[in-house]
Amino acid sequence: MILARVVGTVVATRKDPRLEGKKLLILRPVTPEGKEESSYVVAVDTVSAGYRELVLAVSGSSARMAEGCKDTPVDTSIIGIVDSLSLDEPAPKGKASK
Image (tube, rainbow, N blue to C red; front, side, top):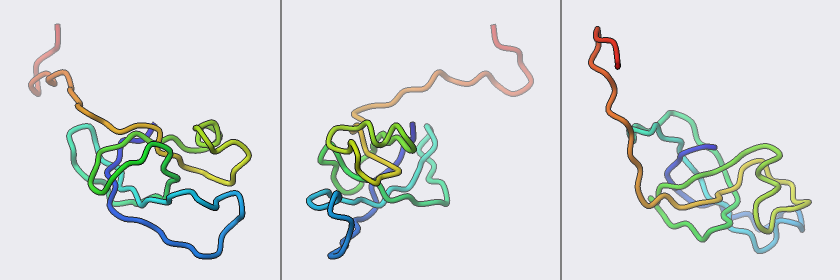
């Protein structure tokens, strides 16, 4: 799974007929700490995500298992909108964790 932020949209007037009616969004992967990574990916939106929302996305064959994407030429699908995220606090450097 990919944790990412929605940063834009793609408008394509000519595309594969199986993509008709599907919203394409530009995602920027982020670390669990919220730091944006340098890459971008285009994904099919299956959950009505909005601009700047934090989302979960899947890629590869998992993307084609998302709702409405069966037999569709997609490589990445948005499958969830993140409401909250929490991490265990990392151990201080130089100290072993218990």
